[in-house]
Amino acid sequence: MLPDSAQLPGRNLIQPPPNQFTHEVRAEQPYYYDGPHQDAPPEGTFRAGTKVVLLEHDGGPVCRVADGRGLYVATAFDGLRRLR
Image 1: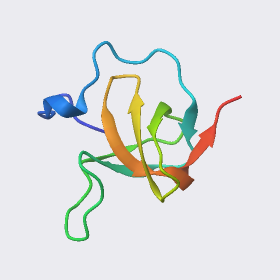
Image 2: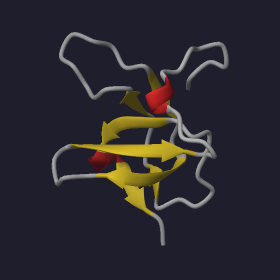
Image 3: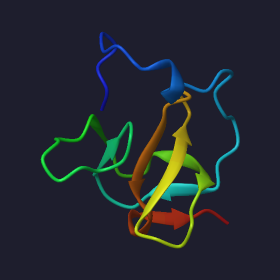
């Protein structure tokens, strides 16, 4: 989880935040502001069950989502489950 005191880059915040979601996170998994980099740690983690809206996915292992706080980040597509 991202602490409330963390500074978010403006490009990673959607206002107003989404209120409808397409997927949920299956298990705790990391997210990144600019995508995963080999030597860089994640910016935070999503908890299992976090609802997100899938915004970008080109068929690769990484997608871009936004959560209910408006946090717009890259995370693993395989870690998401489509909501019905």
